[in-house]
Length: 245
Image (cartoon, rainbow, N blue to C red; front, side):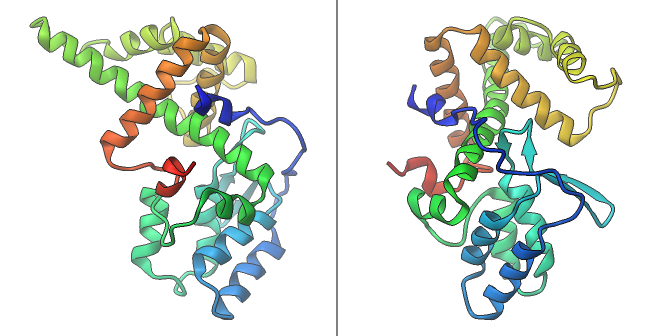
């Protein structure tokens, strides 16, 4: 399926370099561009294109912008940059972007790509297919199983998670999480933080690519995309970019 190919698992140029502080040039650009009258969304995307840090600690919070060195969490960075110009942005537009992935301007795919840069764009697609669509796939399989149970008169929710993961990945959620943590030398603990959860989701995406045939991968990707449409939101993928050709 073309969509899976778009994810590309880009491992080419080391676009981001780990840095303990934010990218001053990008922050100054978004401030000055907005002050100069440029639309805040365009200024934000240009600043994203200038950004160089894969992660940073800022105001007591650790931001991870590049999952597994491949998947660019652009809304995490957008939120960070919006904080630097807080009070200069329309609250309704900012919230629509950060919480629903709905941009205030309808840009074409090419315009968006030019603003953030082609390398970041490829890594951005990795995030969309590897995390956003992967999460939607799990929800879609959950709905399938619940519907099957209701049809058969067996409406028990017990252990449905493991059934979902067995059907999608061929193993239980616990076994997969343990494998993921062993591979990454992470502690085997009861809880999971948000950044690790995103990494685990992306790891599962690659696990499917390595363990399923192409037809199954295409089918599951389509299922995840259809689930996003049913939810009425495209989350981390601006609305126009889903349908642009």
